Length: 330
Image 1: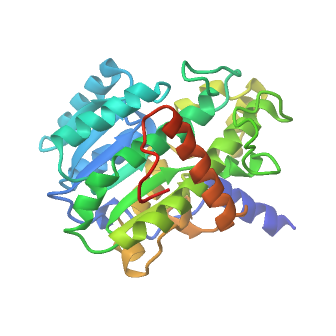
Image 2: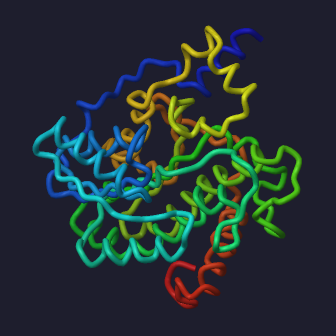
Image 3: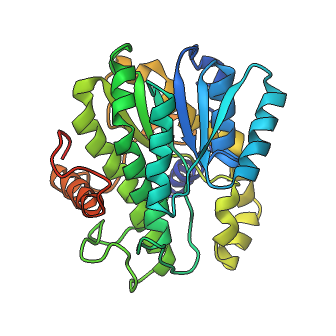
C-alpha cells in the first residue's frame, strides 16, 4: 500500500529523474513555433529553450507589457533568439481569431504549436462570450486558435517527416476531477456542480486530452501529430487562486520538496513537442506526465466521446461565424 501511495505521488508531482534533457532537443533552425501563456513559468522556459535551438518562437498572450519584458529577458539570455510577441486574449474569441489572422499573414508554416496558457480555480465568472472563464481559457479558445492555424501546420508538414509537426496541449492530472460524465454537454459552464471550481477546472483539462485525440485522428493523414501532457505540480502563477488550505498543504515539508520549479515543469512539454521518438514510434495522440515520461490517461477516451466534444465545440464556433459549417475536419 505504501509503495502504491509513493508511486501515485511520483505520477502527480514528477518525482523522477528524467533520462531526457534540454540538450536532446534537436536543431530547430528554420522551424516556427507558437507558445501560448509564455510571459513566465513553464511557457517562458519552453519558449526560451525552443529559441536556443534555433526556432522562431511566437510568444502569445494578453499583456503586452509582460511579454515585452519576457522577450527582453530571453534575448539577454540568448542573444541569437528569434522571438516575437503575438497579442491574444483567450477570454475573448475575437482576439483569438485576430491573433490567428496576424500569424497567418506573417508566416507560411507552423511546426510546433504549444497550447500552454491556462487558468486554475477562481470564482465562477462568465466571459464576454458567455462562457465560464476556465473552460474558455483552457479549452474553447485553444480549440479555435488551433483550428485556425491548421493551414500553417499542414504547410510545415509538407516539408517534414510525419509526426515532426506537433500540437501539444498542456493538460493536468486534475482531469481526474472532471464530472462523472467527463464533459457536461447540457451546460459546459457547470454553474451548479459538486466540487465547484475544482470540477470546472477538471472538465477543462479533460477536454484538453480529448481535444488532442480528436486532432490526432483528423490530422495524422497530413503528417501532423497531437499529444497532451501533465507537467507535474509546478510553482507557477496558476496557484494564485488555489484555496488557502491547499496552498498551506503544498508548502508543508516534505510535500513542498516535490513541487517542481518551472524549469523542471517545462521538461515534459519540450519532450512532447520535440522528441523524435514520438515520430519514430508513431505515438500520435499519446499522453505524457512529469518528468518527460510516456503515461496513460485514466479516464475514457472513447472515440464517440472524442467526436461528440469536437462536434459540440465546432458548432459553437459555427454559430459565431468563426468557423465554416462545411469543411474537412468536422
